[in-house]
Amino acid sequence: MPERSEIVLDRFRQGDLDAFESLFREHQRSVYGWILRIVRDPAAAEDLMVESFWRIHRAHARFESARAFEPWARRIATRAALDWLRARRPESSLTDQDVADLPSRSVPDPGIAAEVRQKTAQAFARLPPGLRIAAVLSVVEEQSHKDVAAALGISVGAVKLRVFRAIRLLRKDLLQQGITP
Amino acid sequence: MTKQEEDRVKQILRESLPPVDPEAEPSRDLWPAVLRRIDAEPDAAAPGTARQNWFDWALLAGLVVFAASFPATIPVFLYYL
Image 1 (cartoon, rainbow over the protein chains, first blue to last red):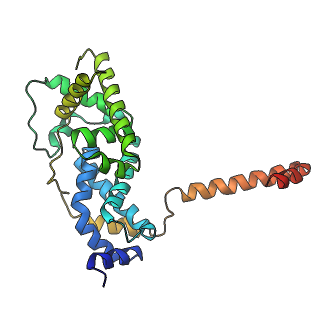
Image 2 (spheres, rainbow over the protein chains, first blue to last red):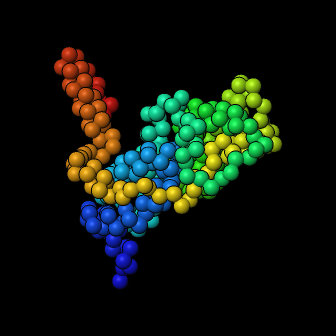
Image 3 (cartoon, one colour):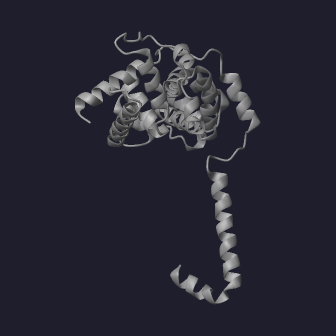
């Protein structure tokens, strides 16, 4: 006899709205957190949650009930976040206020000057979105390469390469600004 | 770039972009907004479908125009199909 979760997933695949709401309630926090890690803007993350779950609903017939829902939802949400980053001008990304408003438990290291942190955030915002996502999830949020690869729909090797390229470009940008990391 | 330099840039990046609180939650219930979005566009095509259809029809129209303009090329096309 199939378990309750399997029944819900099967009903979702058939377009049942109640099953979809059940999945939304179960996974909203995780998917929201994932989007927030990428876009680093709580208001934008909420908008992208709505966009992502709309896309998820639209794609319900393509969902394979035998697979897990969350990695699939994360992949769709990552695509929505990537579209958002591409549409946003780099210079409008990550103001000091954005960083201050972000829910975080981290305390800044006094050994790194505020100016360096600000210039690094701005330089990071200028990187291509595909590299930014891989670097922010792997380096800053310390997500596993496997999870990042699954969300981006690429191989683990490609994630490592993107992170390396992001760090190299970031260092080059900082050096051009007179900051020697 | 040496491993040390790479690690230093990563450290500065972590300090510049503090990790998000894993307990972060949306400030409001987003389900009503999802429902409104679904109701607003219930039968929208899947991503890329409309563009792909448009491209397919444009390609077909181009082929028809080309074949009408140069009928002698039709056997050549059929040969390579």
